[in-house]
Length: 230
Image 1 (cartoon, helix red, strand yellow):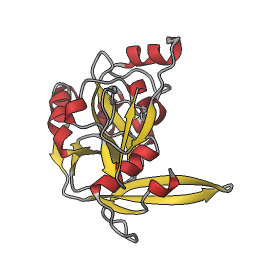
Image 2 (image 1 turned 90 degrees about the vertical axis):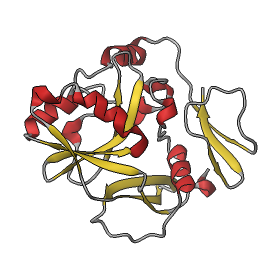
Image 3 (image 1 turned 120 degrees about the vertical axis):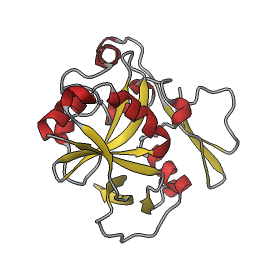
Image 4 (image 1 turned 135 degrees about the vertical axis):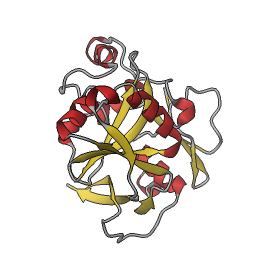
């Protein structure tokens, strides 16, 4: 798969930024009880993978989360913004938190690295004050890169249809050590008690996929179709 990974910079113009205005501790408590990741690991202007589930453990929206001047910031696909806002509005009055748009751009740097004679892929998502030292890549290349490293982005049509273990979120977006969060009971049951292992597979085919349980976007690049299925 090495030959399909494209190095360069992607401008996440299809993403918007939502800032949690209010006391840090209250925003922390709100997010820690809702999102899949451990927000205590967030760093200034460096985005981490996260997502939001419903009470039954189905993923409603995925996104990136970071800190900006000690305030939590969500970078989310514009198509998923309304879903995220509708869910957060239920809890904001209890925490005295306001959600405001942050007028900054987000960029991703996609790189290959050789570690112990083995090629690995790295994607860093940061705010726009980082220097752009790479050539620009397009949307298809960006999404293909993510699929190659096992990072699946769900679009609006897939909201509420999959649980974390079906789309590799248990590997890169869920913290099983931080404590309770929405959907945690169902997700933890699958992690620790499920006897049948969920097998998610990356496919590379020369024709559009048919009759498969697809759990990701289908990306067409290099005359091939990239997608995950169960």
